[in-house]
Image (cartoon, rainbow, N blue to C red; front, side, top):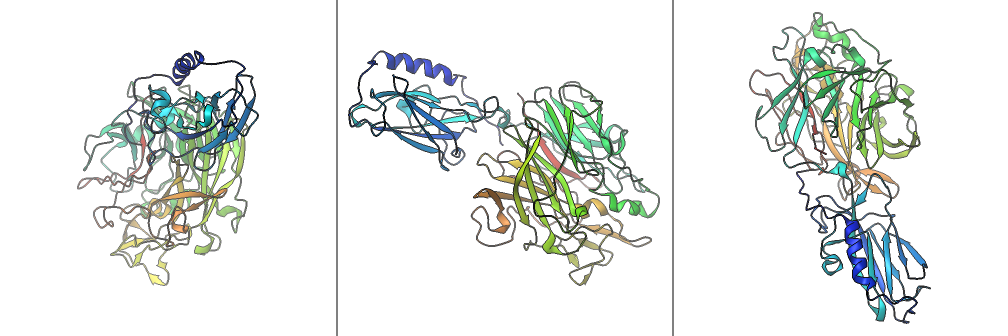
Length: 555
């Protein structure tokens, strides 16, 4: 989400008091409703920019919200908002009496959502500007009233030009990378190569990391160990989670996740080729922090469980809880094909994603993306909300390569030497293998899915595909997708969801296909606004692999 302006903080509750004072002076207790009492139509939306106005393009209706209409005698009729966020309550056709009524919009998630700031003019500015979630309306004489009200989540908001943070993967194969930074930050408005970047941590402090979570309450950045060929782990090995304090600049060990496996790197032999099978199967996947800053969530790629840590302390000796991540409802062809990785957090709910890798069958038709929810309060997983095939056609990843990566391909623990019957050779190659590495829930309820390419993490840059072979120059084929609700489950854009009428394609195109030396791309990290597809390329001679960015919002 881009920078958001917050208006003067006039709480909705104050609006209620003011409106009460205005109406009660003319309130006649016990007055009977005329036969022609009218109706009230309430639109409930999610406020995303704090300006007190209803912005129809940005602020979708909230379905399933209860709205009560109550008369002076305490009699109440209720309704529930539909898919468009609207509900109409008709006083004249009900048992209500009195002509003047109280309207209460019930918060669906107290403690997570809050009544949005209303326009100070109240109902006189309706329905274009926001009214309070509790209003008093006069429906006498057949009068109809329509207005818009809203809820907001503080987790959606950040300061203007918020800084972003990303991880840089350092190469430890011969010749070793002379650069040392592993975490950098830069302002949202920065453009170009290495522009306005500030180094936060080094490979001595963290080693290779991917997952990034942020506690805005404490200004702490958490980063988790990553399994990548040619890149050493940090001091805590495969299970290390590191804490970088933005206030002091210090990076320290936060926790060591157990049971993450520990395949040894061998940088001196065939450029760490023997490490290739470990990628995305050990160490840590995504890292997220709950919106209230209480919990840190991380996926253990080795035991395929969700770990929960206390994010309010600088160190954690053990997790608060561990939850086995269920396999898809419709099973992958083999148990080992299920590979969870990505996380998302929204409105107090955790979203957990992964793929059926197709590794056991080597069939594209067995590639699937899976997302299900997890309720932190109950400590239980919900049903699968997305189960989508990934065998749709994709644009070419690497135009100059014999194996150009024009689709998703099944996982392989060895570097593929052919693709769809074509010999890949020892020069340029792309063989995108999907990892569902990150999830963002957009304000309209759609899912933004970030897919990382396992092949890119297995081959690195200019490394051997086979023992004693030549050096291969790869192009990573990661992608950003959107999935929209259709009934009770989500359908990806590429599978004819979100209004798309042609299967396949790409939701957002990069500025250009990658050609040497532009190999180190920023892996897509969707922000709250959702439509970001930006690359940050290194300057000549640099070997940064900037793969994920995370907004550092202030409370």
